[in-house]
Image (cartoon, rainbow, N blue to C red; front, side, top):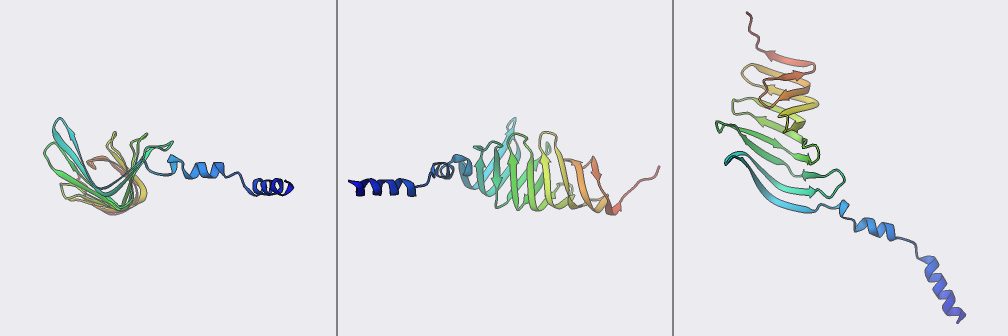
Amino acid sequence: MYRTIIIILIFFISCEDNFQEIKNINSDDRFPVGIAEDIKLIYTDSSKVKAVLTAPLNKDFTNQDFPFSEFPNGINITFFDENKNATLVKANYAITYNKTNIVDLKGDVIINVHDGSILKTSQLFWDPEQEWLFTEEKFSFKNDDYDIIAKRLDANRSFTVFNTGKLDGKVLVEEN
């Protein structure tokens, strides 16, 4: 009888309370709610294609307190304007935050605009609601009027409003 009680006591004393650790392992907030491979999303408005997004992998973390969607293996987006001109966006990594709609593009970010303009940087933030691009990283931008390298960019989607920090390069200026 005493032997049984001692064995039971040793068993309970040697067991730790791992309930919280087990709960965390099985928690939904550590894992995506969905994973999609080889995706192609087509965004339309009034039956016109506005954008096509392709990516090898998408992880949906909308189960987080601050929900987001991640493209860990890169992303390609083609935007179409009202004249069906295409602007191509590529990045090695992307993440979009659902609450703010801000898109964070990282790693060899390249934007090829239909007019021949090219923007290259290591990181670029995109606000689709405001149609605004910004970064604090070094970037290069080249078109018919500009051939610059600078750090910090604050620009609209069409690059008609273009604010930057210290820059090097060539800018075409017309005198009146």
